[in-house]
Image (tube, rainbow, N blue to C red; front, side):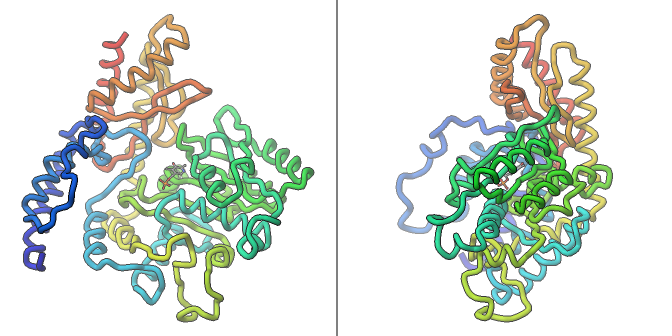
Length: 469
Ligand SMILES: *Cc1c(COP(=O)(O)O)cnc(C)c1O
């Protein structure tokens, strides 16, 4: 494909993209596809000769689009958002054409310096400590893995990096039972074993209990186990619980443990002064991650990861002594995480923040939160429904509870309702457990969502529920 053909095809694709944005609400939200259905339409073997672009595009529309779950659908209320604004797409188009690899300053100075500056902007937007350093990781899972490795090396004075785990002291990692599974994955990948994980009990709001954390750490130290890291969460994935950072930070520090804070979803809302209190005490953290790729209109992938001491992070990953660096006085982001090759992810942040302004982004988040509160009031006043948790920011959970029905039957009905709603395709919701019982989660966070989408989706849930019983 030469550049003239590219240009012609690209115009066609941009037309398709704009059309998709206009009509995404017409699709079923969750793909209504049976397992194997897509693969069955794909040839077993790759073509020996090239095919015309028109055929590729036709098959994309015919085979692929029907098998897509539409995360940008205005009635997508499942999981957490992975929302996209048009300026973010445009930035990714440019990055894609340049095919930049941002592994070193020298391999694209603009990528590195824009990344540093965007992390500084985000730090200002969230009111993070000014002396922290930031890096864009692909996902929060990777940032948490980096934090675990940092904690492991700090706790063993870099002995594991040098000599491996055989003679290492036993380490312990603490978090609440509500925390994201990425910590368990990270601890396993770091060679520390699931047995090094401690789940701290939570209170009635499902937030970590600092006193219980302190007691567990003391117990571990008595038994010769070294507290290596505490992970607190602001906005847990299940119900949006927020751990008390200030109190946890003091305990982590007193025990010499690294303090990592995961605000993957809720972090974006911290640009609004009225929600920023959820991050009170963040200055006691050593490591902090949030995902602009969830709720800030910056498309996947883009995780902002901050550390108090960049030396600790860089020393954990650096594979060459400092004196072998290509240049002094520049940032080589290859030493800040797992990958060598890195995408240029800062351009989409720059485009999005400049296009909307911080105030524009705040308005989107405030609307989502306001509609969530309004919906919560509707659920509370609907007799045969129960609001179970929240809303915390724009996340809540509920169950359908027809009068006089036993808990066990209510739980079975909740799962049946969820399946019926998602099979219907008008909206898309997901499930979690609260006190070991299934509930249906709803979060509002898509860029195109309006108040009317929220209310229409709720009416549909009520209609389907009442048809079930
Ligand atoms: C979504 C989420 C994660 C995982 O995010 P990825 O970027 O997909 O790895 C981790 N923690 C919390 C609290 C989340 O909501």
